Amino acid sequence: IQSRIDFRHNTTMSAIARQQKTKGEAYIVEAEKGLSKSSWFSNKDKKFEDAAELYGKAGNAFKVGGLYHEAGDAYKKAAELFRDKLQNSFEASKALQNAGSNYKKSSPEHAVEAYNAAILLMTDAGRVMQAAKLSKECAELYENEQIDMEDKSSAVLAIETYEQAAELFSAEDANGQASQCLAKVAELCSVVLDPPDLTRAAQLYDDLGRRCLDSNLLKFNAKGYFLQAIFCHLAQGDAVAVTQSIQRYEALDYTFGGSREGKFASQLLECVEGMDTEGFATACYEYDRVSKLDPWKTSMLVKVKRTIDDEGGEDEEDDFDLT
Image 1 (cartoon, rainbow, N blue to C red):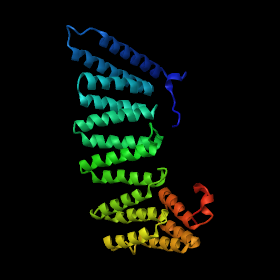
Image 2: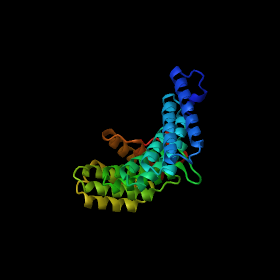
Image 3: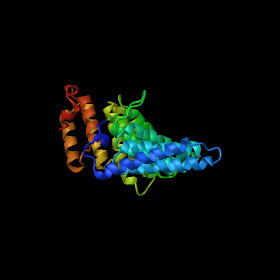
């Protein structure tokens, strides 16, 4: 994880940052003082409410001052009071979200911890859409910040959390957003997971393509997903699965065979079966001229080319020329 600027040790802290730091620290002292007072003859809830409010104010002050980790800590303390002492799950989840958004700028590991706690509260309260959106954000953190935890890699954690987000989006009939998350699962399974799970990725792309065919608005996206499924089979060296997939997709979508995607898939299959590296390079070049190959497709085609090029396995992927 890349290092982040820590304003706590920044000797050139601005005047407003110093002012907000002092304010935040004062709020923390006041909150802790209030919590330490005896509540035998007073309202316990009032004591916890006041302290939670003060921790929230401290979080706001630290945030303005650029002290993001301290802000996260303060919001987290407010959340714990709302959740554990006041049984207010709404305010607790809101405070945890604030904690996470600040931790993102200082410690992504703490951010996902706060977000996961907020997601649990949201799902328990039936706030499914909010939980879905936060799950997606959490998955992006695992993926982009490469956060490993215990015996799970960042790729596995990202996959699991994107799946969770997809399930929650589906529960709210937000099928487009669910599909976006499943596409991320397929992408991670095919090019990031070590070792890759190309069989699962192919099935996910197949399912996504079929979903598109059920929608007049999305049906034109089906061919792209079907081609991605075929790439996964090709990268496995499974010519039989590729042949069956092409036939199946032509039956599902009569326009697939004559489409750019369908023709490209057939050309690649022919080259793989004939061990024709020159024809493979030509097919990739011609397709790229019309539809630019994105990084995922390029990565997968490199895998495919290596199955038909005896010398390909010695080259690094970044230096491996498809054409």
